[in-house]
Image (cartoon, rainbow over all chains, first blue to last red; front, side, top):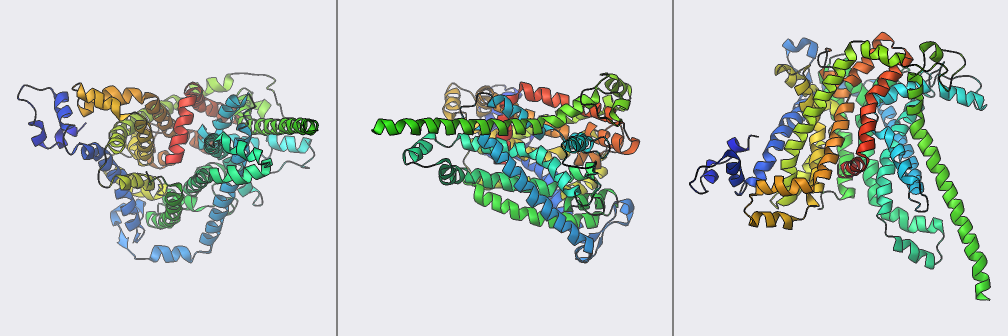
Length: 320
Length: 289
């Protein structure tokens, strides 16, 4: 580590005069006044290089015309042109609407299934729930690329087992192309994300449920409360901080990740599953138009900052 | 009289409880099937011959189970290299984040100094910056440093979203180690740094392990940065490789399923071994950041 180099020499000479090894010297520095800050220094430097500088320079980029394929032409300042041309593009507003559907429907479905599962797992009389817990968590650690291809196979229009099951059960007449039909494409991608992310809610809400004191329920039972009363008067209020934190965190995740769309639909058919994150990514990756991509990202940044502020306000993480 | 009334009420109470248990079991069963079925189906598909996948009557159980897909995949050049690349990037990321994160987390956990709360909030906020916004300048920066298409460059960018997570998790675990133990070590002549490595780290080791596992899984699975920042086989990680193989070469389903299974087997094994630590890690990681 660079601790030795960045240390003020004064604190090294503070010790006794005998010959010292390198480790004991660093040990000495650790007794000094600036140790707390020295410990933070490497992380600050790293974050400044890989987060702060990129974000600031990304925001600056959004006020410029800049194509990475013509890098020798450099950046050309164009003010708000990137933004005005975005806002005047009708497809941009379709994309914004899709993003809203994606984020809202995604977080609601994932939260609902996560909560139901967590409540079921929380029943103490059931023996097998630890095993079930591990199995339910599995989708959360499966990478998005694999998840995408797994579901592409499951929902395939010719070979998909889900089509087969639905036809056998008489729910469908014929196989359907879930990802190619504009009517169902968004719902299909949402289903894949539901699979991947409901365990996140189950995990957090289950932990929250476990921390509610049993006495509260016992007291309510003495007062003759029925399960619905108990759920509304105890479970929901006690769980609220976890619910708010989990939902907002998940919304941030949904705004931010175009992975599933890249793997499954590439935004199609038409613009049916095109979201802001994918728009930003393909503007950069396929059109190499970094200026426009930066402008889209800055719009996402504004949206995310709203969520982040809400998160910090409601979760109380920085109260400490 | 009172006893007479209490009896049927108790019995009906018991029956309601049984009904709720049954309902809960049903829900758990449905969730488990939903969670596991896609993985099981992929595993089954990976064991089928291609002509048994592309057939009009669907086989639920492979009629001619074979490991042919796995053999083809392993012989097919690229995959071993991509695995090696992913392993190197994952290792570099874990080392980098743990090393830098440990010092910072210890500082925030143990010292009370001005701006401490703000630093914590700051690390939370930077985790929420849009990925693409950071990707664009990082791309230019890494390019001018010659770190595009480079495993170290990739590991460095992973710290953008993993350093805050590791810092917040480690802080939580360090908080749980009583400061008294450290004070005792220091009275015995240990320096603060000595106490960190000889007292705090050993006591927080399950937490450190949980953090490492979570970091490793995240780095191993990462797709977007790797897609943008690598462009040759020498540094391509497996999620990108898999995506390109499927997209460009129209990979047969059986091979795709085998590739998916090979890629997630390390994670599932990890998960099975370090289940408790990982769940704890995921929980802290998710709540705190």
